[in-house]
Length: 512
Image (cartoon, rainbow, N blue to C red):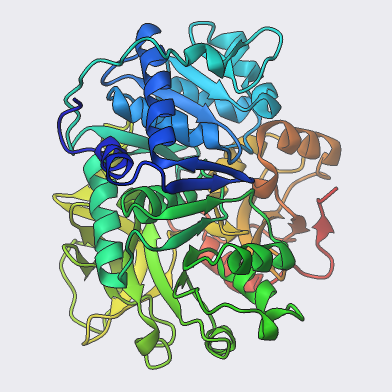
């Protein structure tokens, strides 16, 4: 029997408790708890036969599908960790996390194999499997070994379960290491405070390849023993209404944009949302809160990070209007404070950097001890975000991490984009900032002060080759003067954001 305190034990428990109850509904396919356990065990045996064991790291590059979940728990079963590979990365981008995490094996959706072209060319030591039969690749089914059991492994709460790459402020992604205990404690804190149980029906509408979607599955679904419906990511409000109502969903979290779109549907007022009782988003307006309250659905709001395995705070609906603009109070078993530039704790009402500590805080960044040391202040995680705590302990997030912007709910770090497009003719002096977008929330814009015209063909070609579509700049504007800088020479993006509170009329569109 597998030893220790780990996420696989949750799957094993529920498979024993009610083997014939549905665990996962994914794209029309139903998998019961015992089936999920058995199919994961088969793949675990195959991984073991390939030489994968405790402490090894494998990668998953898949769209939402049942095999993603089976492979995830197969890795947990033998003590390996899973690196979530971004389904929107280009081949050039994909090489970095595969190499940085030291992956020995990657299983890819056959539709995403092209994204591994650079890995295939430069890392022949990495074993690559495909979900289906594809010439040149071994199929995932080759890993299913029914006649062989995986060995017993002692996997503890401190062992790494997931490596989740976030875009780095230095221009290179950082792999946040989340342990089995980090995710379990996050799940317990959210579930206990929100009343989630095995009777809930969870909807995961975000990619499992992203931390948010994966943590939903693990925290609210698997740990709680709930039935989880996993769909292909969509922004179609009609499709989302069909799932929410048809599957009698009780718990769902997503970006505010989707809640807005659903609320604008002609079906919104007449649809039966009576089952939906636990809904979480961030930064909802008073108009949005009241629109959903009118159909009987209270919205909760949250603040969290990849590095905290999801939520760090929750604002419950009974405080939503009274504390409009707040992200709520810190979850149980966690602490949240505000510090000044010297690391001193500040009093209520004073703005400073948000720091968090508790059992959900990551174990560090892969291969980045200096970055980990800069981020961790003893037990405290420095978020890089600016916030204020009021006298009742409610957090208001004043500004996100220095330059980061959110486009369609996804984090985009300008430093990474700037690294990619540096050297293009006409971009002798430039910076990237976020500007508002009615569709995506924010989009990147290049602010340039070059000495010659920008080579547009080269700029677009490099963005297509090296940046996922959601990261690519939407606009280019000529500033017409030297960019503002600090005494030490750093560009003052704060001043640029004030100057460009939107994309100006003369900005050149870069979308194709």
